[in-house]
Amino acid sequence: MKKPKADQAIAVTRITKCLEDGSTSLDLSALRLSTVPESLGNLTALTKLYLGGNQLTALPEWLGNLTALETLYLGGNQLTALPESLGNLTTLKQLDLSGNQLTALPESLGNLTALTWLFLGGSQLTALPESLGNLTTLKQLDLRGSQLTALPESLGNLTTLETLDLRGSQLTALPESLGNLTALTWLLLDGSQLTALPESLGNLTALTWLLLGGSQLTALPESLGNLTTLKQLDLRGNQLTALPESLGNLTTLETLDLRGNQLTALPESLGNLTALTWLNLRGSQLTALPEFLGNLTALTMLDLRGNQLTALPESLGNLTTLTWLNLRGNQLTALPESLGNLTALTWLFLRGNQLTALPEFLGNLTALKTLDLRGNQLTALPEFLGNLTALETLDLRGNQLTALPESLGNLTALKTLDLRGSQLTALPESLGNLTTLERLNLRGNQLTALPESLGNLTTLETLNLRGNQLTALPESLGNLTTLKMLLLDGSQLTALPESLGNLTDAARFGPNGR
Image (cartoon, rainbow, N blue to C red; front, top):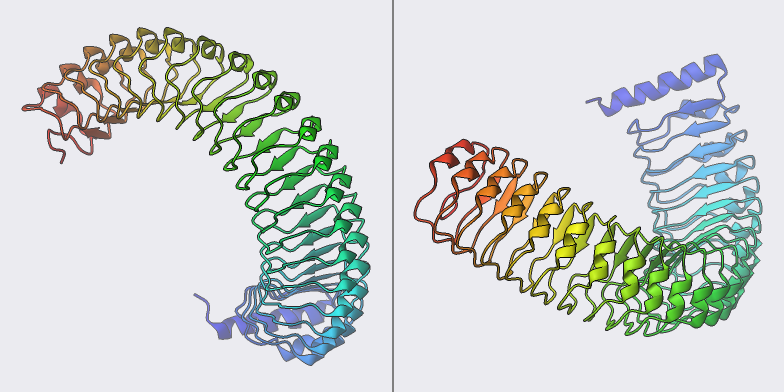
């Protein structure tokens, strides 16, 4: 490991070389410098200076003499204050002060009227100087993770600003002057303390990304509907109880995240958002879905888990481009026939509902790779389940199954099969066809015997047979030479077959585990 003195020597060597060569760029980053070398003050022709990732706690006043600087990187130090002379660097275009411990900025910052990038993320700033409004050529302003509780009205002067990052701040309100920033394309406010948004937000008609997740918003302004170029809108984790009808004007919207709010209904106008590909309504309080949901025919992902849905609209079957549908943790007792139209689905999550049977049309979903039916009230599985030959993961745990269909053996792409906590008394011989299976969980059933065909599952790595009523194991189990985990505790076994001696990689096996 290099010592600090050695690093200081490296810095001096680089400064000397820069003087000799007449170079205009100097990199002194990550040298563990606690002070800026005095000799640096001679490099008055420097245009780029990198001092990031050091241990600087202060900057010398003479830094303001480097008036040719266009790029100054000071991120990742321990600066608590900046010298007033910083305002002399009037040709600066990029200034990185992120990851320091700054609590305030000098008024002279407003002299840096050539700035296009200003990074102040991860600081301890509680306020910004009014002079910030002088930086009228600024395009990117990063203030994420600061302690700001308010923004100056002068912020509205930054009319060339394209990206404003205020994520993780302590802001409780935004100034009306925010509406002047008509060049903004990205506005990032997630993780703030905002309870309301100004009506002037609707003036930001160039916005493509608006992130407001994890704030404390209880309502949205109608003017939100003016943001007709918006592509990403994140409102997750607020306290919204309703959405404005004007939301339907956002016809270019591709991603809408509303999870974790207190929505009980959706506005009719939502059906206008025909460009949506991603809609997240997880963890709301929806009891029903409107028929117009079927208009969103570009959707590829729909997350409805953790609501209070008791039924689904037939129009859901119009969403034929859906590949991911999550209905977990609702109160569904049946599925609409039209669900069989969703032939592009690869992931379907129905866990934690109240389904007692599976409809026949489910057999049409032949592209499915993951099917989660855990924690329903299923007593039997239909033969058409065997049509789902692309399935790789099938979770059936916690149902009331007493038998499995022979067609289960058609699912030859399966890698994970979870049947724990059912009421199975026997397994079909066709189970031995699942020769790509890697994980098989049969824990907590009422099995008294296993089929010999189980020995065909030669890619199996985990086999959980805990808590059954097995009195013997088939000799063929010795073929499972890739097993890493064999769990047998809680069974009625009195002896193990000799063939288990082949399982040299098994981590645990035996009547009581090991």
